[in-house]
Image 1 (cartoon, rainbow, N blue to C red):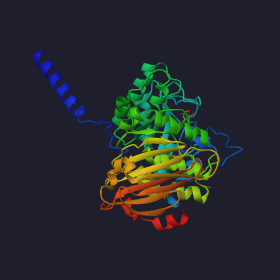
Image 2 (image 1 turned 180 degrees about the vertical axis):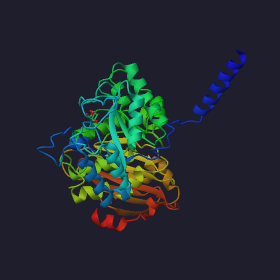
Image 3 (image 1 turned 90 degrees about the vertical axis):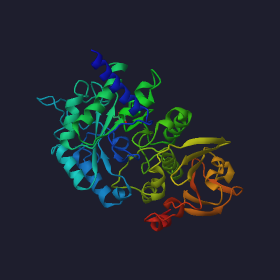
Image 4 (image 1 turned 90 degrees about the horizontal axis):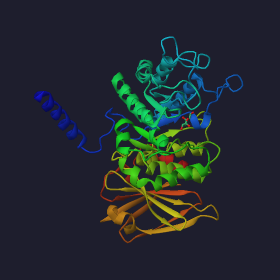
Length: 435
Ligand code: GLA
């Protein structure tokens, strides 16, 4: 009895040591920087009408075509490497062995075949399921089948699971379900990134325990679905700023807050609003999951989404989520610390009337001038690339910002050897000429 007790004390001590190391995150080695890729939901929803709309319905063809374009047109080269299926891929029943099966008409070759195809393009495949009895669109959920479904996904060669929270039985089972699916995925031995909506489904009832969520998920949605509108993007930015004290410190390599898909390249956002979404998602260290039609996308939207400077900010290896640091009249200033002692800043003009307005700031007003103790280099990245010169603490910077638009810039100590500072990222010439 005594030796059993001392055995468990040793185990407890070891786990406390492990937890005490700080920033404990899902130990699957994935998402060391925010995940990048494409996800069908916002643009293609639950379009299962392949008779009338074969080009846009949820079918294996859609993901094959997206994978083709991602590999051929530079998306993969800048880091977008997950092609993700959302809801409505399933058949309405499980097979005789209770395994999930895709809709046979729309996915005649099966998911394993599709995963092989996506892998042959050097990309990864994401899939969707739900912690409850049914998915949000009413297809069979994973409740009661977590281990079997995790193993099925692993057998098929799936690389990411988006796990939704519709139709859960009760709050305890919702939380337990998210944890159990995480453990089940790990037990398969396959690298499967785990995207959760756990906090979003908890918020109406209770404050989520983010430390716990981070132990099980690679990223997690906090609020309702994005749609293709400025109102929706604004709400997400506001929600994030309001809760930043709680959620920003939790983000870091291995686990990220997910403000939902990029809707750049669709119908609802003006050019300035698309710039704002890209800039803010970079500052917020957000997963960059585009939901648009890459087969037919406006060249400006493509250049914005493929801009290596913005992606480098988003993917900064320190992995610190930025925050809104001040609000002045209609302006918001957001700041994110970067590797090499630099910072990225976003100046967002919330006015929805009038023309461009001037935002002026003295360098020592930017994070107490930490990046500029001697000299610093200021580089504007959005809306157009521009070296803004070498500065000192007392330099005054002026930025003209369009209504609902954002200026994104970086400040680096002049001595730092950072590719973001000196603008030596590959492809920058082409990028600069496009912007
Ligand atoms: C929920 C999720 C969305 C999407 C749909 C699919 O609303 O939040 O992101 O996955 O379900 O039905």
